[in-house]
Image (cartoon, rainbow, N blue to C red):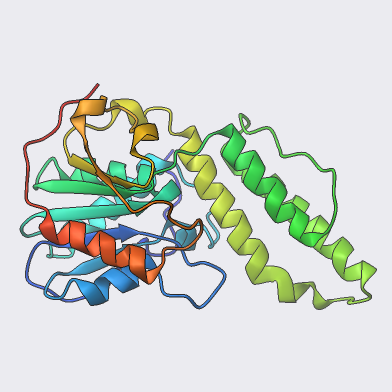
Length: 274
């Protein structure tokens, strides 16, 4: 059976340019701070910049989508955009690295591509359950457990959303807010979508067999701990960042370092897989 289509665009063009496009996977944080894609769009003039937003996609009616589907949809829409000229760079920050790596590898079948992974992190059971507990606690103390992550992913995400709704309603009732739960809706949807994306990354057990065509550069403040699924240590480059970098959203200073590294990149031979 053909899965339902994504009901929101995963790829958005931020700036014009003639060649050497830049695709940046990032997420809208719960603030007005500029995103990495927006900051890079201002600091790499003359190059088309695209924003990849999987969390925005998963904020619609589609509760869950496997990572390979998200990557294939993104790659197809980029190739259809007419901007696929020159050396393509795909940037991913932290947990966005898995999607960026898949997108880069798909595009590398037709184009010279480099994946730039900024402080990469790879979602696992611990990360998903940790974030679930963190977000649920925003609505008050609770002992509710994270759903079984090995169950059907769509049902897992639906159960997570219901748990959030229950805790949100309890919080509103305890404060005599009545029907004011609507004020929390955007927050709930963001939490659900972010956890759905992390779950998709966690479930992508084939990632280590699905890479190897794109060149890979890792930017990290702890290079000795860096790993990339599917690639041997000598199959990717590591560039050390000033240490330590602050956790959380990318700062303008860190975005500037990324822009410098991106500007210095040149197409390189494809790396071999592990």
